[in-house]
Every structure is written in structure tokens, then in C-alpha cells.
Image 1 (cartoon, rainbow, N blue to C red):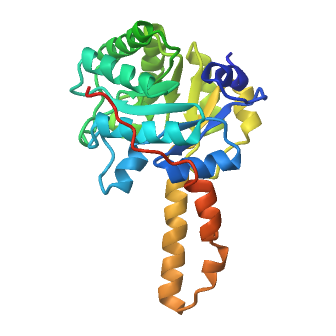
Image 2 (spheres, rainbow, N blue to C red):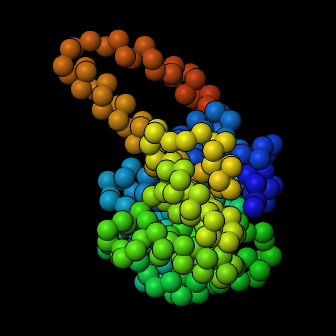
Length: 287
């Protein structure tokens, strides 16, 4: 079992605990700065959250070049280890994935996430061996640029639920295949119940990351005892923040009262946290 602190060492961040490494997802510099200020030692970019912020449904509707520019800006301004979400592999050749991973490493990323989910909203998954070949290409990219890479492979088998025949068994098969192909960590969103997590981990022969997507979850120590290496927060923080905004807006429209604004950070605090070190836009080589 790989502990959270061991994964943190691979990423180059400080996590002095055997508990699973908690890795929040961010979608812009502001969200990243807030989480760094809160003490999180590493972050991942979120293609889904970024897509929502731009008015798109998730599902690879945002180009990889754009995702890498956003990741580069976050990497430059937050100075924390960042794992870049490159989404899935549909309609993306081995060479294209290889160039994308090279670009992510060149802008300072410490890792990448590759998934097997559908493209442009298609509710299907790419063949398991096709994804395995993309993972091998990603690993070769790191070798060629001579940089360390934490390669996270995500399977949406459980997350898609009824759209996949035998989703639990399919997730296990894909996770083990991805590990054999060179992934350092497999991400299995859609699994949060501790009993199911135990079953999952006993059948996957490598490090596992799960997603906690709502508050009715076990303790972090329970996930440690189950052998989980990392816990993603998925898009939970973004959805929570927007839910809070909607609730306050609805209250304002219903009551005409402005008291909730007293809870807001001051403009000076916002500037101190978010704007002090923001630099020029990061340029990413064409992929």
C-alpha cells in the first residue's frame, strides 16, 4: 500500500501523514489561491469545473490547449505541485497524448490525469487497451523530456453506473490494466461508501484514489484503513460555492435584506490573496 505521504513525496509536496492525500480540484487562479491559503499542499485542475465556468457541459468540449493554458497560469501563480487534468482519450492519438503530456510537464506540471470517459458528451468509454496505449505514450513522454511524472488514470466505469454493464467489475479490470500500462495511481470516481471502497481496494493491485462528492462520507482515517492513497474532492467545492451563491441570491430576492454580504471577504483581502503575484498569460506550445 502506498501511503498519502509517499504520494506527496512523489509530487514534491509536504503531507506528513499516513492518511490519504486530499487533492482538491481547481478551475482558475482564484480557486487555487484560496485552497493554497487554506493549507492544501497540492491541487489538480478540473476540466469539468473549468468547462462549467465557461458555460459548457463537461465532456471534452474545451480543447486541451486551453486547459493547458489554465493549468500553466495556476502552476505559475500558486507555486504548488499541480496535476493537470487532460480529460479523456477519445479521438486523440497516442502521439497527440504524448505531445500533450510533454506540454504539461514543460509548463511545470507534476502530473497528469487521463480518463477513459466519452468525448463531446458521449456516454461511453474508450476501449480498455486503447486507453492503456495512451498511458504508455504518456509515460514515454516523461522519459523523453527527462522529467518525473505522476500519472493518474481515471476510469468512469462506476461513475456511469447503469450505462456500463457490471460497472464495479469493469472498474476493477480497467484499473488493473491501467496500472500495468504504467499508471502510478488509478482514480475511481463514483465510489464513496466505505464497504464498497474496501471491496474495490482488495481487488485493485495498486494505489487508488476515490472521490468524495458529498458530505455523507466516512472519516479520512477510515479511507486510510481501507488502503486508499488519495482522496479527490471532485467538483464538490465548486458546486458548493455556487450553491451558496444561489441560496444567498434567492434569499436577497425574497427578503430584500443584504445581511449575507457581511460574510464576504474584504476587497483588500481578496487582492492580497488572489492578485499579488499574478503574472502574464502562460504560453503553451501548440500540440
